[in-house]
Length: 85
Image 1 (cartoon, rainbow, N blue to C red):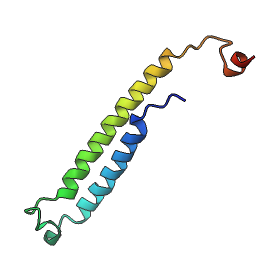
Image 2 (cartoon, helix red, strand yellow; image 1 turned 120 degrees about the vertical axis):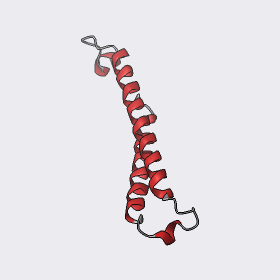
Image 3 (spheres, rainbow, N blue to C red; image 1 turned 90 degrees about the horizontal axis):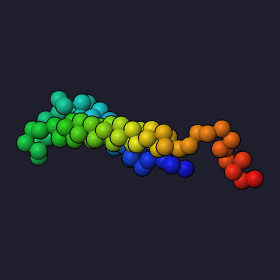
Image 4 (cartoon, one colour; image 1 turned 30 degrees about the vertical axis):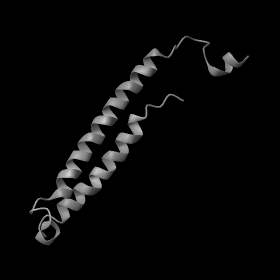
């Protein structure tokens, strides 16, 4: 199983970023949430950062996975069942 670890990690970061982004959008009109952070919508900006990082990791992982698939020999008769014989 040649799974690039960046794919599930990227998906996890993208999901967390999406949750933070949604929370930031829903609380953007509530200044009491952001009084401690000098009025900056921290959830919104960190959601954007995590979503961008997660998407970038996923893209890199997919690219790496495609390179692994290219390097795998695809000659006829090279299946797992025939190698076990």
